[in-house]
Image (cartoon, rainbow, N blue to C red):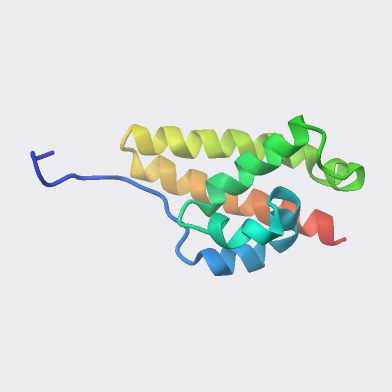
Length: 115
């Protein structure tokens, strides 16, 4: 890395608005919908998992929703942490794998709410 030019390995939500639509029920449970515009940034995937975990810890998730996503939420947090670690380790292959797995688990959580 140079003094001026930085090299980074990062994971960003390509289209935050599309992510908000794709995981809309999860987003509604995780965020105050009035502030969702602010939350739907390039790191939406990280903020979504963090907010769901925080709300679960604080007992702010509706019981039915918590029951539907509880098992997968733990795995989503592990994948979120693995993704962040892979990025910190400059390991794009591991980060890519974790990103796909995180998308899959968020999809599964969204589907379990819709059912």
